[in-house]
Amino acid sequence: MIRTPLRPLARILRAREAGENPDDIEAENRARRHAEIQDRTRKRASFRLWLMTFAFTAAFGAVGMRMGALASSDPSEPRAQTTGARIISQRADIVDRRGRVLATNLSTHALYAHPHQMVDPRRAATELAEIFPDLDEKQLTRDFTGKRTFVWIKKKLSPEQMQAVHDIGEPGLLFGPREMRLYPNGQLASHILGGSTFGAEGVSSAEVLGMAGVEKAFDNWLRDPANAGAPLTLSIDLTAQAAMEEVLSNGMRVMNAKGAAGVLMEVATGEVLAMASLPDFDPNDRPRPALKGDPSDSPLFNRAVQGQYELGSTFKLFPVAQAIDEKLINPNTMINANSPMKIGKYLIHDFHNYGGSLSVADILAKSSNVGTVRIAQMLGPERQQKFLKDLGFFEATQIEMTEAPTGKPLVPQRWPAVTAATVAFGHGLAASPLHLAAAYATIANDGHRVRPTLVHRRDHPQGERVLSEPAARTARGLLRGVVTRGTARAAEVEGYDVAGKTGTADKPRPGGGYYDSKVISNFASMFPVDNPKYVLVVTLDEPSVTNAGGATARTAGQTAAPVAAEMVRRLAPIVGLRPHADADLPVIENRTPADLKVATN
Image (tube, rainbow, N blue to C red; front, side, top):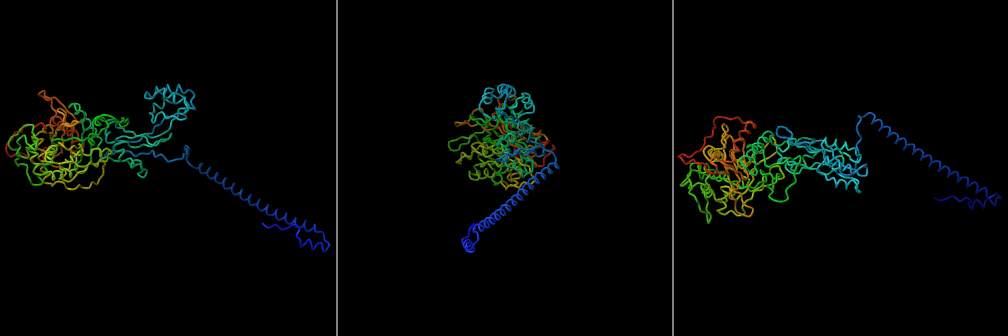
């Protein structure tokens, strides 16, 4: 800024020449400058006053509008705002195919403490230990009397426990609202549901995360707000599941088995209506996983999905069905069944030496190892491998559970002649009961591949063809013969025309070889045979029962088959099947009389 001089030289000189007083010029200039300064100051002050007036008017206007909005709205409790990521505590329900709740949420409270607000921390620790026996009184005392300012005590409380803590009267004990996962049916379908746990936690909310089963497999979907709370609908039928678990539990007890598994699958869709593994657990109080020993000893182990078992003579159906499809045999083809049979340095035996030849129908009905190997040799190892691969025995099932990949079958790396022989009658390749159920469902589905699923939906794409329809139909007739006159007579259920195959396999030792008196017994079946709607697989781990003659029996015909028969009696009416008198499909039997003595596998 250029300032005007108070005593301009030119005017001063002219004033002196004119005899005027130069000081008057300075006074005049000084007065003009002061007037300009005052004018600028007045304008600045006026602008500030207007600005303050506008600010106060806007502020009081906003307050007034907010007060008006609050006065016209419904009253509600204020909510505290916190920084950081939002905790997503909402989780969708899980229901069965009929809409019955399998998993839901329950409002509860967590218990925490602010030790610096406590009046008598030692008494509080003592009384909390009385309410919650799992808490350590000494540790609580150290936490409450130390330097900690915050202590988690319990992540979830029952109403009774909450009232008991209220009665302590300690101001430093505080409650935070939250939602917990509730499984109203307890242990029912525990392996399918899996269980849940808390993730990110705050004093007023907690994130619920899936730990196993469908809870973990669908974790993102169940927590997605975009689903607007829509439930996840499983293929499980709660009534059928309860009946299966009850029958399987009783059968496991009667047969003195170490464990058991069962699968009921809808043939046309692959939907699993019931799937059980025993022993089981309560997902409301999920046990800790075992860190030592055999994983199958833990109740968390899902035998139906994770179990890798040699499934014994249930596998004999596959080379027979494939050879029929290849037109190498028919049900009445006679096969050399002399036992033992030598392959390289190995001998293959039948439990009974049937002598001479057996028809294909009798090979399956009597469960002849030698006859089955002869049929497998007609196919050759390459075709045998391809067929088993097409049935799904070389990969894990795609069922919607996190445990599914751990149940991938144990397939031999090499496939020489002796391996092809042993796999033909169910040894050397280990798979889960769910794999077996899917393979039998493929044959029941006229040869179209069936993939198991736990999701209930309307549209199910038809699987690729694995076996021709005539061959699949013939194979089903042969299985019916196993029940009517073969090793699975104990599986017959009047009015439902059950078709199936028994399988008894010695359990392998961890260090190699097989146990002498420990077996896995299986029965894989479909019903009704004329138009199969359902496939049922029952597996018993180390069964042992005393038969009528006083001898110890372990074979599937005497253990798994009768348990499966009781399941059919209970489950068929539940799924809407009515018993009928006659089936349209004739039972395929040998044209010549044959020894119908029951085999042991």
